[in-house]
Amino acid sequence: MKKYILIIIIFFFCVDLSIAQKPDIYQLSGFVKSETQEGLPFVHIIVKNKRRGTISDFEGFFSLVVEKNDTLLFSSIGFKKSSFMVGDTVSFHDYFITKMLEIDTITLNEMVIFPWNTYEQFKEAFLKLDAPQDDIDRAIKNFALIEDQLRLYPADSDPSLNYKYFMQQTYNQLYYAGQLPPNNLLNPIAWSQFFAAIRNGDFKRKK
Image 1 (cartoon, rainbow, N blue to C red):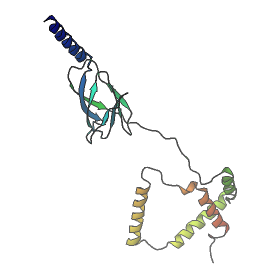
Image 2: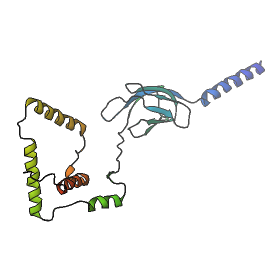
Image 3: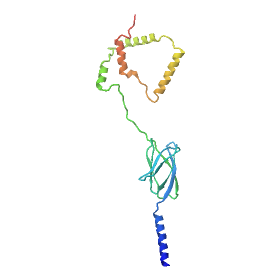
């Protein structure tokens, strides 16, 4: 009889020991949101150093099984990575959290694009410019250019031209939205073509 009692005591002792060694498991659920309180979809949520994880749904909701002292890693494109540690003082097996991710702003270095491949090509194009000698020469050429423009477009604009001009302006605004439009005043190629036209006599008054 004592033998059976001893076997029963040992059995319950082993069962209690296995239960004590079993880690605490929790059902962790929650929402992943941005700084504007909007749910973030398709956020990667993994348990650090373990091959388990999940992905938030379209509204930012997620749910997975975790253990005490597990560390969760949250990552999403365009947001800074964040982590969350399951504390050892959790008393509920259904645990709910709301995780906030900060926007990750990437600052790009300035890029300047030149129309020449090398400095020698720029030097050659600059030296070929035929700049006016003095202010009087420059003024005469400017007046000749204005007179030529007035002679080419003497007629008043009609509805068709007004429509084309309006559509062109609208197209330019949409095309250059968020950036500065090009300025041909600083374009050396345009200046080279302008001085070449002056040298060829394209702006001379025809008798």
